[in-house]
Length: 140
Image 1: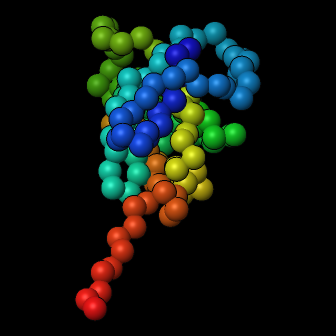
Image 2: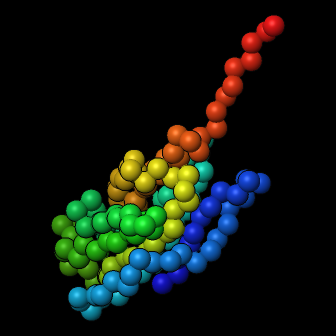
């Protein structure tokens, strides 16, 4: 599985690198595993991570942080639709897994997550010491 480390460098660029996973997970069932496509945006207060995970809801996604590694796992909901049994689908059923190494500037204690219509949104706030500080200038 490809993992990405995202760090903010002094020159305001983003760097990709292989992340170190705390340990390999042992799978207990035979299902396809997908790496969700993910976009990462930087805001003044931190990072926003948006991952496409079709078929996943708030009850079937897990987000963990261990040793600065953020791990997202999700199980695709395979319930039959209220419309009936699927005759043709554009995507296969399976699970999702993805890991990211968090920069030290991220406040892991205050990460917030929401999921809606199969799109997971994580807010990764900057720690107070990493936020830019405005210094007031007084005359005289």
